Amino acid sequence: MSTQTLIYLFVGASFALYIGIAIWTRAGSTKEFYVAGGGVNPVVNGMATAADWMSAASFLSMAGLIAFSGYDGSVYLMGWTGGFVMLALLLAPYLRKFGQFTVPDFIGTRYYSSVARTVAVVCLIFISFTYIAGQMRGVGIVFSRFLDVPINTGVIIGMGIVFIYSVLGGMKGITYTQVAQFCVLIFAYMVPAFFISALVTGNPIPQLGLGSTVNDGSGTFVLQRLDESLQMMGFPAYTDGAKSRIDVFCITAALMVGTAGLPHVIVRFFTVPKASDARKSAGWALLFIALLYTTAPAVAAFARLNFNGSVAGTPYAEAPGWFTNWERNGLIAFTDRNGDGVMNVANGDPFTGTPAFAPGVGPSGERLVSNPPLPGNANEVYVDKDIMVLANPEIAGLPGWVIALVAAGGLAAALSTAAGLLLVISTAVSHDLLKSTFRPNISEKNELRAARIAATCAILVAGVLGIYPPGWVAQVVAFAFGLAASSLFPVIFMGIFSKRMNKEGAIAGMVAGLSVTFLYIGWFKLWNPDASTADDWFLGISPEGFGFVGMLVNFAVALLVSRFTPPPPPEIGRLVESIRVPRGAGEAHAH
Image (cartoon, rainbow, N blue to C red; front, side, top):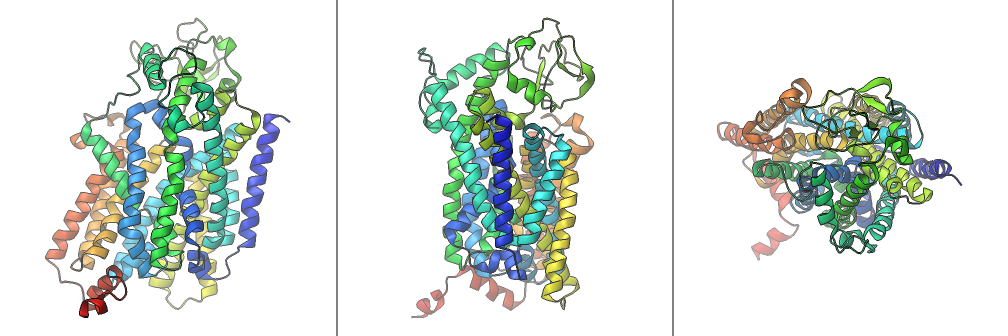
């Protein structure tokens, strides 16, 4: 059976499974649509949360980013995993004890204000649409290569699949679909990692293989060989970092705090029966997430090592099949600048730049890149970072069924998170804006209809963002984390742990934090990208890390405004006490 047939078989079977689960678990009430009825088992919820959390950025882009950033890419590993611990300990149990449907629900009630609820909805929509752009881009990349269609067509196909099981099943359908997607994506990530680790080092466990010697009898360690090969091509050593200390700190902190403020992850903890189950499901989710995150550095190193050996110095006429496969989709390219017909890989643009393909082909039959080379730049190869995990099995020469499995896994990762984000957006519109703010007397049937209409509109917007993304997948997702860190996390944190924080402070903090962060990211990434260098950044902090500064602005503005405005009503203090103090603690203290 051909590899292409296997891809159709694996992807088709996984889609049939997801849609079948959505039909089987169709939501019949708003509670089932919003929080799956509130009765999901903690282990099941842990798997669903892991799938919701491990998006296209985790599956597709993170290892590719580390492969080309080396040591600097570790900020994503530290930030995302550390953030989940913060979420599990600081927020999840308390929000579950609060017992509502959504994050804006908590903010609107805790800050006794429909304006605060509306501002929270605006923040949530900003975050979710930024995040979902990366997921739809990931879907388009997978489809473009493995179903041999343009990226834009791939995005549209992905929109259709997500529409079926998110609009039909709601949170109930998404929860059980995400359990299946977790099984698919983790299996798809681990199997090729075992294979490649065994081929490169002789040790099938990738976490151990990364610290082992290369399987060629030389006694050279993997990272040592990788450092040597990169330095020969003019790149910095893989194990050296180029980012400043303050930027590493801010990116890591922004990703951590942003994780704890992501609405589509927080809402998962409303689906379990009680607060203790929220903590348990967070623990299970962390265990399931660790399977992928501890494997990613090894996948990245093996991918870069195999890429260097497969491409650098190879005549284009003898280019491996995987190279020409990805070249057809515009995600890898070669321009023969010196006319020797050999693919020279060297440090410089467009290796990490954006491709701009000239019409036609070059004298060696290559796809041309029209980016003007930098002075003295000998690089002739462009590669999209987001393809490395998907191309890894092909580069290593693994069997066709492994390639097909990775295709299904990449789609599972992107679709699971996209569905969760779409549900959060539709819930914010139908429940937080319509039901709780503008039409409190709306019937449950009409509210459910409004939620499905909102989800449909959100899918259309998500598709446009997937076709015109503001960056590569992990970068776009990092921006979403920065927006979450600067807007929602501070007001949730202060809402739980500060009785004095009032509605005026919360609203001012959210507006200030979101505005500062969005304007900073927009200036350097959308409106003035040519100025996006460390010399131009505020204190050397990159747009990916500025969410931490936005968070500090949020806290400062909120605390300052609350100090000069009236304190919250007494019942809000009692609400905060009931959220924070375990049931029965007051009686025990009295005795």
